Length: 416
Image (cartoon, rainbow, N blue to C red; front, side, top):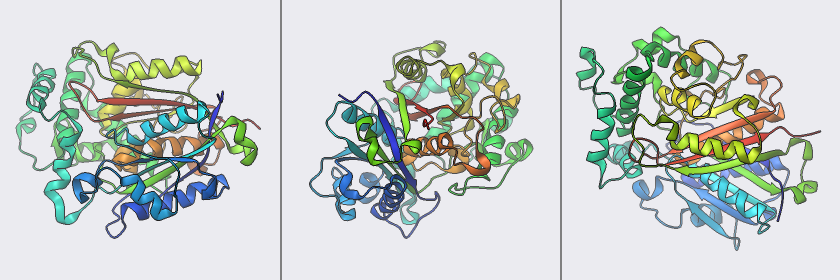
């Protein structure tokens, strides 16, 4: 058994619309970058995890997506595993690769997240695909429970307007926001503060889908999606890919040791039958607590974090769930400036999902990649000074009142 597991290579594509690029081409570009970053040939990879959610629904490519993309790249004979765990697909793939490497089954493994979400000739199918990431049989029951979370909150007239086509997940986030606003006094302006911060961060990220800073007032004035959520508080549909090279500590002599980032803790959870008021039983809190215990650290030890902000309200919720502040104080934390680059605990310095982009099957790996770059001290104008420990929180799908899956990963800065 290997006691330590490291990430020794990372690579990704720019995020956005890649209309003329296939899933396997996106994957190949990310793999090229990760292998070059690791300074290792493809022949060193002993096993691979391929993470994707949309090829089945939008291309009819079910079952062997990884075998198709990775053989096209040149990987033959090695074990290839397909991981679809909604938005948490590639972080789940990383968890599986970590476990296999730590168990001693492989010395060097590859995790690839690759996604195409934008198909202009299949617009209806693009939005229908979101519904595959929640319980189709219980969808009406779950939506009624979600809407009930904020039913006691007085709503402004615009909350009743038909705002048009959107992902069902934006209605879910709107319901969560209304609950948080009603119970804790969180304001729409605090939610907008999160979005404005992350749009400001994204100007420093050359891989981001959007790189235009926005003010809080501009976020509030943007098109309403589902009150209190405006368009610039929402993650866009994105195409893109990311690859991670994972290695055992015993194999580090093959790589540049000073750039190898240790996986200090990694934990996965699913939801429970909790009530809306049982906020401390949220699946993200469960996963975070497990990851902290495994890593032997506490929330106060974390230098920076990437949180799954598919909508800006989610950063507030998960800052609380990860223990960075008390429940009900996530909005105030953002408003204080503590989570901005240069603050006490920078969050989503990459721009976050709603500015950087959210290619679902690749998102978790991209969060980890961004933190690896930070911990190496290679983030340029977005560098967090003295970053030692970093946390990635990646949620996937929806079931009941919360996400269906959550992966929390804690990474440690390389030692000289």
